[in-house]
Amino acid sequence: MTIDHAATSVINEQFARQGWVHVPSLGVDAAELARARTVLDRLFDRFVDVPKQFAHDLAGGADPAKPILPEINAVSTLAPELRKTAVFHAAQQLAKQLLGPNAYVLYDHAIYKPPGLAGTTSWHQDSGYDPDRTNRLAIWIPFQDTSVEDGAMRYVTRSHLGGRQTHLERTTADGKTVKYLEVDEATVAEAPCQLGGATAHDFHTVHGAGPNLGVNTRKAWILDFTTGSVAERAIEAAKEKVRVRRYRVL
Ligand SMILES: O=C(O)CCC(=O)C(=O)O
Image 1 (cartoon, rainbow, N blue to C red):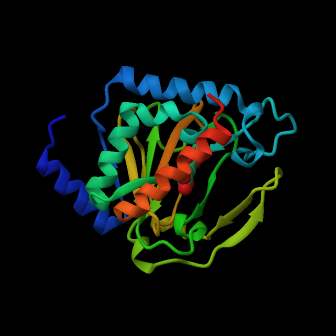
Image 2: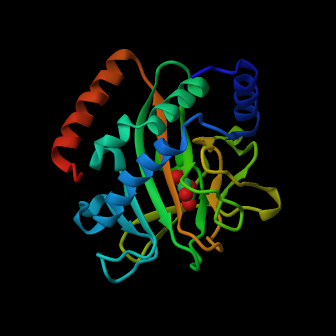
């Protein structure tokens, strides 16, 4: 893949200044996007087989076989093929561009948000869930064109400059603790994103996502990256091997 240095520096500058950036193209072709989405689809089809600590129905539906607003955590541990996709490699390359060459994936999850539900993702900082780290970002990858109406990401621009905030907490119907912040809607930037693109945000950036008022399920894969020394990355890779042996579903 050719690296466009001008585009790279615009992306890096916007990310540093705003705390988030829209990347119009990850440079991944349609077949490769479909490959990653197909693996995620198979995982969501097997929602009921996913260990409970990783599978959440954010809408608190009563039937575990038919979640209403499903979220699966650690998707690339449950389906390790995901880490071999061009989408994963493109996300990793973007993370290295923004965080530096020592960036590695720490955590990932996917949310399939159906149309016709409230389904708003509350305002929060990822750092609200991570009290220790100082260097971390998330890359949000949609598997369809995602307009504001479809539930695009929303950001409070420059909120990363204020550091960690104290979050409020609520518990979903299926027992997941959700941390949230209250935000003045006038300060919010919407981030619609076409298929093939992505958005990235710093872990201190206050963000959420709108309800899906469109007609299709809004599918997104979200990958979080941090940085670490060679030794830290080797330890993380070894731990990941153990997790895959224990939890793999596909
Ligand atoms: O996809 C969404 O609805 C929101 C994702 C998000 O906020 C996150 O991953 O922290």
